[in-house]
Amino acid sequence: MKLAMVGLGKMGANMVRRLVRDGHTLLVYDVDPNVARLLADEHETIEAADSLHDLIAGLPVPRVVWLMVPHEHVDASIDAVIKAGMESGDLIVDGGNSNYRLSMRRAERLARQNILFADCGTSGGVWGLQNGYSLMVGGSDEAVGRLRPALESLAPAPDRGWGHVGPAGAGHYVKMIHNGIEYGMMQALAEGFELMHAKQDFGIDLAQVAGIWQDGSVVRSWLLDLVADALKDDAGIEALSDYVEDSGEGRWTVQDAIEQGIPAPVLSLALQMRFRSRQDPSFAGKLLNAMRAGFGGHSIRKQGEAE
Image (cartoon, rainbow, N blue to C red; front, side, top):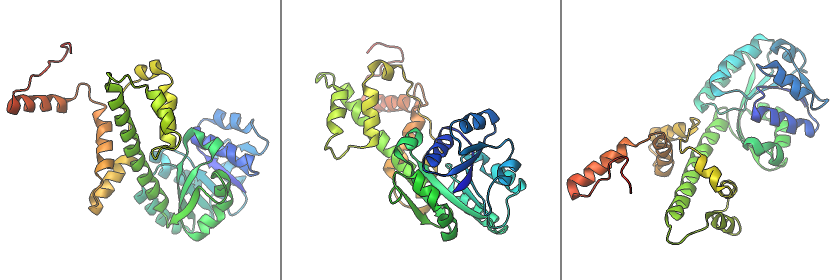
């Protein structure tokens, strides 16, 4: 295929690199023109566009434009590429972490102009270039069919790691649930290793345990591999802050569970624990101590007192 990539951050740029490795031709654009030019210098089948007008003009009809921009900039990016010359029958793909409801609305809006839309939940992070991306695609059969050659190249293999999961909005919905599950898995691993870290009388070697679990264990996973890598550097772990950000998809997952009336206590608590990480000290912890003192007379250690 010859297609365009708009947004050349870590994900977008690596997706371009993986596509050209498999024989595709890319026109690329970024708000920072130097980023696009540097990427184009890497391969003869990458061409940097100085403007969105040049980008659209350089594509064969029907055009395919893949957006890899922050979710708050998707609508503005769609408007900009349409203004730059996209026409009836063209296809716009949103590969970022957008809210699935917005993807449904965008598909409806574009359909009135006879422009196709696909929402692609994209997982793989900075390792996607090497390992391939997990792609959850929503949209019509026509839209996904047209995109199929690129999807097969971006995925770990043409026949695995990607799928057409439903109509417009379904791709970002599945990715939202994926990220909610990710929160829960990460929290469980973090808590388990913290318990072992605190069991000082056993002197457990956490790096050793992670290595044991990486082979044969039912909890082996890429996340566990990341834990094992991190534990190889004790000083690096100690230097990290415990402040944990959330991208928004965990919140959307919990909101969806509430709206559907479906219990999701693990996913909900994992999100709440990310909020907890941003409190120092924790007001909730102070209240817990006050209540324990009130009903049980438990002693309370004041802030700053030695253990």
